[in-house]
Image (cartoon, rainbow, N blue to C red; front, top):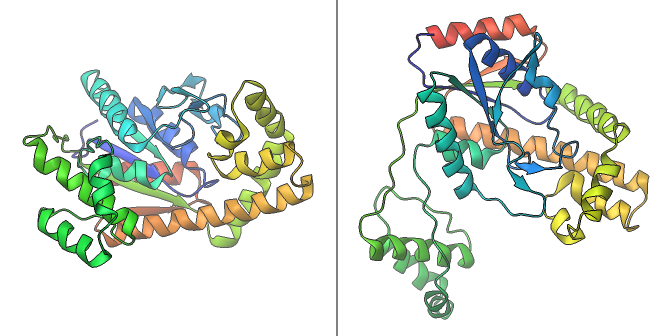
Length: 306
């Protein structure tokens, strides 16, 4: 396919149907999918993360996918590692002339690719931190302002984040030349969404289905495999509330209601993140979730070829 785009990004809130659209587009474009989901990287965490692996089968063809099931449950994978892994997969697909379809709803993972800058792993500088802890917020702001490059932006909304920002800028200053090359990727960004009431209904129906399919048993199995309750609850949402139910902290009814509310809130935060991307200059072409698959794919093809 001839297109000015190097990548097709399909994003949207949870339970929005983005995976099936991405798989269909990968089928049409002879491409492969790169997942942008911060929890689907974990092996054995299937129902709780909504992997929906059956969506990757289109017309009797299995669509290859990447960055799903790459680390064990209990490991704390991070966005720095994700960006490195994405670049390896992206380079491999390009070398094989496979069109990359980037699909997910994890805002930080999407940003790690679409913003076009390479993350650098900066270890903790305990000596520097101890010294900075003695400073006032005003002093920390002055130190940060004296260090940062004009184009750098960091979250400095708390003293802890200010100290981390200074730690990072100090690392850059003392390290000299750093390999921060990131390939220029021109992506078409397409969002799939439903109206608020429909989204809420879909989330509730999907939650009931996944519980019926054995999500509680999945949590029990992970715990039996040696992952601590604390580590499992770290992954949030399904794993937090179902673990509380499994260990007897809450009833099944409380688990369902609290989890349902938490997923609704999560979907709302996702939409807020996407609106934030638009405010920062990203053009997202939104598709109505209720449109037919042909209408969705025809629209995406028109955008790719325009």
